[in-house]
Amino acid sequence: MKAVYHEGPKGMTGLTYGELAQTEVKAGEVRISLKAAGLNHRDLFVLTRHSEDDPALVVGSDGAGIVDEVGEGVTNVKKGDEVIVNPGINWKHNTDAPPPEFDIVGLPGHGTFAESIVLPAENAVKKPVHLSWDEAGVVALAGLTAYRALFTRGQVKEGQKVLIPGIGSGVATFLLQFAKAAGATVYVTSRSEEKRQKALELGADYALDSEGDWEDALEGTKMDLVIECVGAATFNKSLKQLRKGGTIVTFGASAGDEVTINLRDLFYGQQNLLGSTMGSAEELDEMISFIEKHQIRPVMDQVYDLKDYKAAFERIEKAEQLGKIGFSISK
Image (cartoon, rainbow, N blue to C red; front, side, top):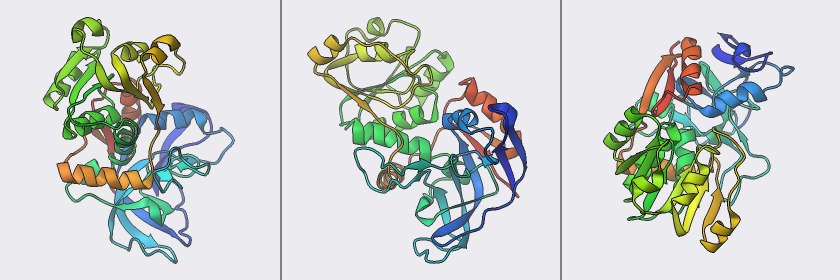
C-alpha cells in the first residue's frame, strides 16, 4: 500500500511517501480502505517521539473509509460499511481519566496516512451520513477533544460566556461550533485579522486580537468558561478573564508547557482549573449524535493529496490553517 511513514531520523527528515506492506487482519480486527485522513498537531509530535531505532511507522490518527476485510468474531461492522476511525484505543467508557492501557492511533501502532489501516473492530464507527468523505476523515480526534473539554469537563450551559483563545486549529473551530450550538455566547482570540473575521462569520459573537489588551477589549466582562489550548503564551491572560467561580479547561500547550500562576487569585476566586485530553468511545458516540442533530460540519482549511504531505505538514507547523487540514486518499 502507499503510505506516509516515519523511519530513521527524527522530524520531517524521516518522513517518506512510499510503499509499505499491509498488515494482516486478526480476530477481532477490521481492515478499512481509507478514503480520507486528517492532519493534527499530534502528527508533528509523533515525528520527534518515534524512536530512530523503531520500524517504519505510518503517521496519522484521523481517517474515514470503507470496511473491506473483517476478522473472526467481528459483529459490530461488516464488509462494505462506511466508517470513521475512533483514534482512541482501549478507552470505552466516559471515565474521569483514560485507563492505563489507553493508546492513540498513529503511535505506537500504524496510523491513517495510508491506503488502508487495520484496527480493532470497535474502533470502526459508523460514518455520519451528512458528512463528505473529506469531512468525515478529519472529524474524530479534534471533534472528540473539543466535545470532552466543553461538555464533559467544562459542563457548558446555555447562556454562558465562553472564551476560546487562539481560534484557528481544528479543535478550536469545533469548540466554536459546539458552544454556539449549545447556546453560549462565544468570544475568540487570534493574532490574525483574517482569522478573527472568519470566526465571526462562523458564528463567534466577539473576536479579540490575541496581542491586544483583552481586559480593555472586554470592558470588564468576565467569562464563565475558558477553553485554553494555546499554552504558556495565553494562559495567564485567559485566567484573568475568568469570573469568580468560573472554570478554565486546558488540553493543549503548543505555545509552551510551563506557566506560573498566582495561586492566591485562583483560590480566593474559587476558580476551577481542569485538564482534559481526547475522550472515550462513549463520548465519541455522543459527539457524533450532537453533530448529526445540529448538522455541524468541520471547518475545512485545505485538502491535499497524500503525496503532497510536506506542504500539509508545513502549513500546520506554521499555524497558517483555519480549521482542519485533510488528505484525500485515492488508489
